[in-house]
Image 1: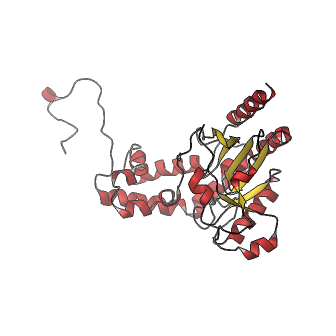
Image 2: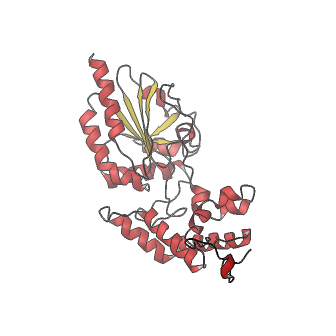
Length: 301
């Protein structure tokens, strides 16, 4: 690497001096940075900060702000410039064939968010869903069996001339918790004309997999009983008024609808009318309300 400082004044560059970013220049150095980032994420100090911002929705920060600050401080500790943060975040894309880059960081191992294949105007895929009400039912099918007659076909929730709203999420998802009261308000406003169901899916931040301060201490679902218990806790703690069903343990709804970590859908006469998308790491329910208003207005006409 050429010397950035030229001592010969005749050859000195004109104009302002611009320093090159200091970055990890080998795979081993980048891996060392990733391993330390992983250690710090799970450290008591960072988990405490996650807890503090997660406990106060009015503080103007969330767990991702804590992570961002931690990453910037980390690269500086290693002697790198701030540009190294982007390199740290893009490491799996830089080394796609190296398995260590796919397993070192918790958010690479567990972030399953994707846009999916659903588009507005296509038929809503059918899949089995699990009701919460019957404890006997829970005991009978505490496995991944999706042929049980007690399962509810998603298609059976669709009623002619009546829109259906599906909300996919989990109690450990901050996105869901922050707007659960808004979802209740929307439900109360439209429930006489629209059907709503919340679908309990795989946890966004299970306390034993991807903790962010353990504001909510729900572990990864190992059995259907675990998933149903998590759904009941979600209803109780957020005072959710919307009826709840659960995804099967083979995650059929998750695979078809890509709702993780939280997402909403509107279906009318079996057709997808809205496939909700997150905006800047939060959810704006404006699209949901506008879609319902349009559908109900068309129905009147």
